[in-house]
Length: 277
Image 1 (cartoon, helix red, strand yellow):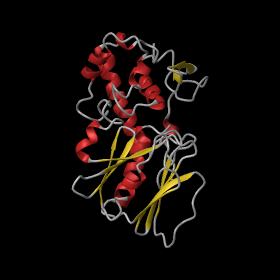
Image 2 (image 1 turned 45 degrees about the horizontal axis):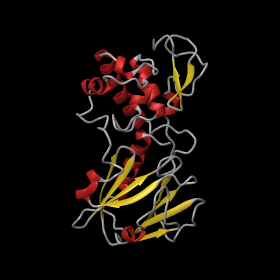
Image 3 (image 1 turned 180 degrees about the vertical axis):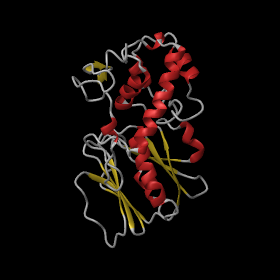
Image 4 (image 1 turned 135 degrees about the horizontal axis):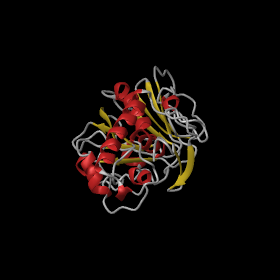
């Protein structure tokens, strides 16, 4: 599943190519993905201009002009991709598993999703904070609200494994399986350690590592594993910098100890038993 760096890469790819463009047409090949799509309401955006492309957690938010400043909410699910065709002279052929497309003059935004676990919804700006997909979310990892002290306070009394704790979007958004494993390694914290046993110094290292790992992944265009690619079909390169994820039995790049794998919270987890005691 695309994580925060991949979604941020998609957002940054769309923003300069769509902001200021007028939506001319919307075409749906189905009326639902993971949930029903408000097709008529979204089609009613035709004639509006894109004012901003932002991100909240793993959701791409596209704000349109109009009194209510409506926002499209786009989630890629497990296998969803957004492709933007530029300099289009005629309607491109539909891709396999392409479910909707939007025309912006000579540009066509297309959504392809073999597993159909993605989402598309519409919300007025005033109601955005209360949207059921967004209301429960914790702070962004780069926001001031996310800090070592915040992590320490939220972890008190928690018996859940640290990695599972970090992947909880109610605690902090966007730290998925890959980057939680990497952040724990850089912080020197064993991912199976109960979150309630984290010390303040552990939380300081974790907060710093989470920001550092995510920033590096964003700079590298995300991690290309299985389905993820960017809006212009470029691939991410952060997989070349992964220190533990997917490297079971390979030597740790720091100490040479074989990387171990386990399952935490039904997800594959990787760590170095020497660097993460």
